[in-house]
Length: 282
Image (cartoon, rainbow, N blue to C red; front, top):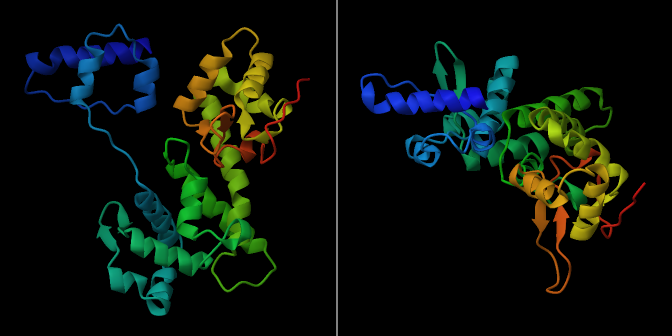
């Protein structure tokens, strides 16, 4: 934090004095918010010099297609013959240094996912593949990590290789649904490294709260039991800010607030969906 703050302070002090030098600093937003000192000179003004770089969902899918095409170039021919996705939408650019770059937009990606997984998937076979994947790899802030979507396709493909059941699609939807467990476990492992002070929340919450959504008071009791020396309300706010927790919107006017955890984290934390927000203090 001190190093990052000093670097940004140096950059800002040189901005006008050395106008011919325009270095760029690439810094994750959560690190800027969390680590950079509030006492930094004109921290709020630094935001006027920032430009956010974010992945959108279709770009992440294009990363998956790039990996798939580069692993097996024959799929280009197969897909163009069977569904003519590639020839119809011209979704590929080729660069000498970085190779094949798919540039499919949402309608193209929906078509391709339908080809790979079928029309519907998920509980009761009601979800469109495009929506199902998006909902299962997003945190509460609608942020998606490239690693999560690549891991989802990779684990689904591995499960498909050992699956003895026949399917009309490239990947049986069930295998994609089962792959979310490995994705969730990896994401939980990653976020524990990012926020080591919350590690015991990620590992021990399942021993106090069996199912989500959970009532606010029950969640406070559970966190107090895990973090006896810290303010449970502050921990809830931090979990909300980093996209692990969100306020459950389905409630009656007089009901107590409930909180939920997105599917990206729920199975990896050993938690289950449903129930009445019960609590077990051990």
